[in-house]
Image (cartoon, rainbow, N blue to C red; front, side):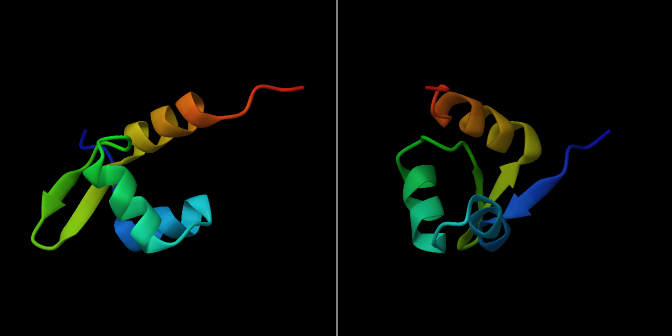
Length: 59
């Protein structure tokens, strides 16, 4: 089965950040992606992994 992938705009909405922030994360390799044309695609599993790596531990 093919995993669901999201566009930059969709990831920005999910993370509640600007699209430019998502692009910078992709360019720096912090959020793995595939570039198709002028846009990036992000797999559901990579978004989950990114969130897990960057979540603040409970106080």
